[in-house]
Image 1 (cartoon, rainbow, N blue to C red):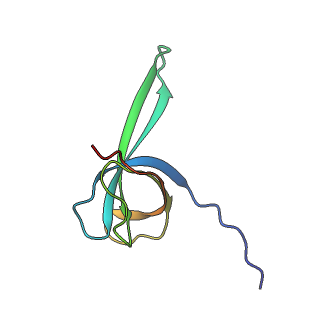
Image 2 (cartoon, one colour):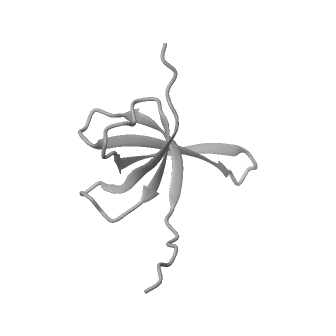
Length: 87
């Protein structure tokens, strides 16, 4: 039985909340073209599974789609891109 590469959707965003256990809220921003011609910024929040509680607020992470883990959670944190700056 050969293993096939699955095409999972991935998004990059910033962690805006880490108050839940094993879950983070990730804000994903994208830019779309308005019919007038302006570029508009759109944002959406996703709940993502964070198994080791290693992603903290302000971190940039890559999330990937997975099976539904709860009512609102169908994404998981695949890797940490950049840590938040400590001030």
